[in-house]
Image (cartoon, rainbow, N blue to C red; front, side):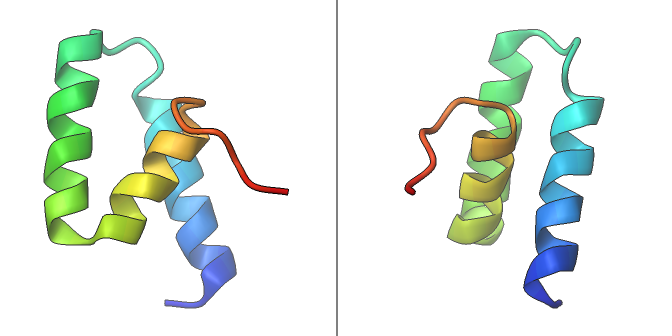
Length: 54
């Protein structure tokens, strides 16, 4: 998947998780990271849980 599509996917998932309890977000991020570390990191960044490098 091209990088721009990956970013949109992470942003869309993060947007859908905005009203989800934190314990569920944590559990899902764990699943995403197990599937693909960059996927989990991308969703976490989109949620504002990780700082982005500049």
